[in-house]
Length: 447
Image (cartoon, rainbow, N blue to C red):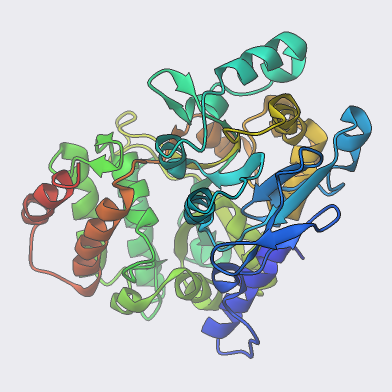
């Protein structure tokens, strides 16, 4: 069981009413794990941070330990002669720590590992990350075969004004998990050809099991609205950075889609108080469908709902009614970047190549990582041993995905969308047009 899966499973057990000892280790833990010789100095908030100022071992900060290849950089050191010390910062405040360290005159690490791609612009604006154009050009010249396996999106994800600022070699994406037995019982077939068909599938589930939850969601303010944004994108609502056009045909369709689901009892109104753990727990306890990240599959297995008898997975359709493609699939990348001011820029750049090696990507996937934007690893048969459900439909959806809406105003937009989604989930008499007209000016004002 991976570290990530264990933590998520604890959250499931809390929702399902079982005993749980510690449910907030990933988000609330301010401790760090340091590889190598463990040399540390005090950070500005009382945590420990790796000492990157001696110019010897490369210092790598990573957001989740399962993105580190299992050999802990041993093969990297054997091949390059460069020692690496890695430091786990799992409480998602690395940017704020960098700001405090910079203000205090403390040295930053050499490499930032597996950070959310939508935050990279903030790192660039703060001067923590500089152009990676030369890193990419040198890589292509020195290791053209490996460089050629990278999907263009691995670089395009963090390209700003034509300049590369990091390597987004892995990315999570949302899929529809469904209860296999319930679908068979209700006569629902997949893959869905349209979003209309998904709605019809919910209705069939409700008719088959009147007291059931056909589609579970999270709608707790502060926990995000990934489900809403995924359907907006799939329905064809245009977006500029994090700002969706709710008043577009795609926007109106998506809002109305959720309104129909809520008004027909296909969404649980109590989800207004559900976060990630509660919505996933509801699916494990008994619900027809959930739209969730690709790597949640391991948690469902460990929560007692076994694949493929208990659950299966299918892509989110990118069509409103089945008459052609209307929208796009979204993916949320994890980005690796060499930090500005490193004393060892060439050695630090080699870490990106090491992370992108096929064996390292596959082994990381087995530990809880996400699909890769590297074609050799992506098509390696070993992946089916880790993800037996990773079929051609899902691969095509992933390969054709678009970076998730991002920008420095993403948090403000998210909060506004949460308010609208909350209204929908608990029930409202407003039309889709009225909701769009109410919330679009608020979203536009964040630009």
